[in-house]
Figure 1 (cartoon, rainbow, N blue to C red):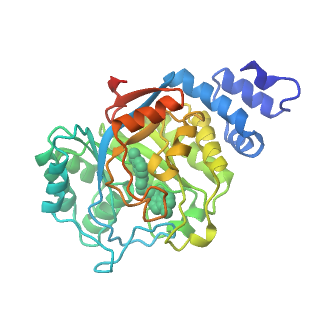
Figure 2 (figure 1 turned 45 degrees about the vertical axis):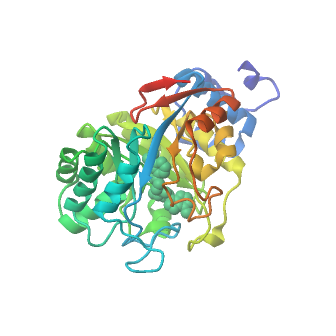
Figure 3 (figure 1 turned 90 degrees about the vertical axis):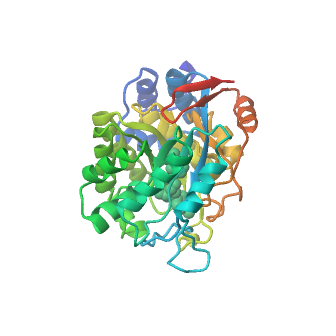
Length: 371
Ligand code: V47
């Protein structure tokens, strides 16, 4: 790694950032913005790869999972969203508890360990209904880990429908079988940008509060960031910094997932999409900056398999899972894989082609099997 400090390779202040990263010293927000602006891609790959190697060696994780998207009916109208429909609109759906039971049942013999449940904030759903969704899944798959309801969905039910605290609401859902919270709804925490892209939805502060309460109740959760729309590098770093601060306090985040804005069929289509270099830079800077996160996920249905594979050389050490064609959020926004699904064999091959060691994990990153 010493070549990174080579005489003509970089000037100060990049040199001082490289020194910090190589000696395990936390970088500042200014450092992270400088990395975004000044570091070339190969340097970011080397630095992020170094940080990841220290934390995870050559292991790359995946799990056997599927999604349930109970409804795409949503009270909110986020500019980036291609998924939302209003009640009864063409293309809207609301799964009944019987539908949900049937989907869960169809995965009984498939060896899945996790279900990811997320969808819209339905105007008429109460806490009892979220609880019934969880109980219905557990009724069919008692051992599956239920990672359910983004902070945005939870906030709508807690604050607008039930008028209860996150603590009260989460305690009830935990009793009903909730195991962890997915990372959705974080978008970009900065209030000005947030106001433009999802002004009606919970604030960044509220998203962080719900995750903090979840952590205090013993739940773990994931964190996301929606990038590549109207935000700039400082907004991305501010977002990462707020996550790093919360993780310092609670240690409750399992992983961080940068989500690239996909521009089809939404009211932000005119903004377009950033290129793959930007994807790799964002993964790398996240890996370097979030020194208290063990895992960075390259979510393959959103990035595409090729870029997800490359991301493994830019600090990512997790690919999410098999998915089995059960999510529509990204295909509705124009992701290349209209029916996302990979067999365990395909995921392992992809990881091996990147020169890494495939490891099947559970939802808390305990090793199930090394391939
Ligand atoms: O919050 C919606 C994003 C999120 C678009 O926790 C979009 O393991 C890009 O959070 N372009 C929901 N992104 C999905 C999510 C997630 C995904 C994978 C793994 C995990 C996890 C969580 O999807 C939303 C929003 O940020 N999103 N529309 C779009 N057009």
